[in-house]
Length: 152
Figure 1 (spheres, rainbow, N blue to C red):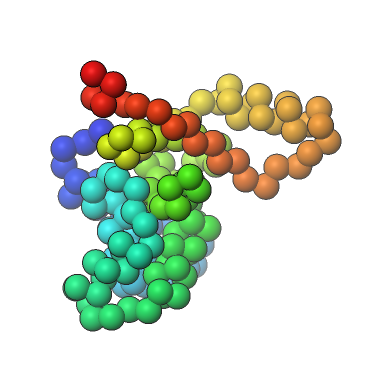
Figure 2: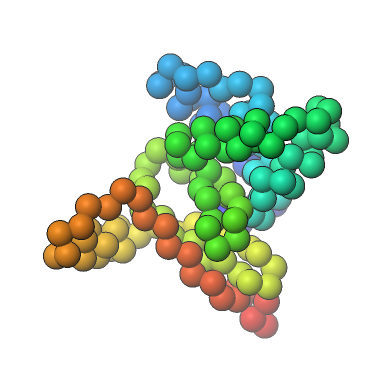
């Protein structure tokens, strides 16, 4: 994630990106999709689907799990969130639609997630795939360790 002190700004920026992407693609940015995106971005920590479900239940009654999973799938497919497989959780994408080959530095102590992007890594993956006659569908690289604060 990005380092920030103004989560409301990050949330409003994420919502703006969601609206723009949906408008460009002719998709509906429904209230539940919007709310799930807000909840993913609210703390800059990885959000698990059932935690999102609990928060929605407190605010809007009792949504069923498939509703949350469908919203998360929509957000994933449209580049607004990333899924962190090692944590079975989701984080917001700070630059949706720009590229798909990001990697994540995940602190195993405080769960801080930093989204990193380098063209060199994407090129290296492409070269390796080509050398092995492999066609990539998606790339997900998660590096577990300790952030600066937790290492101190």
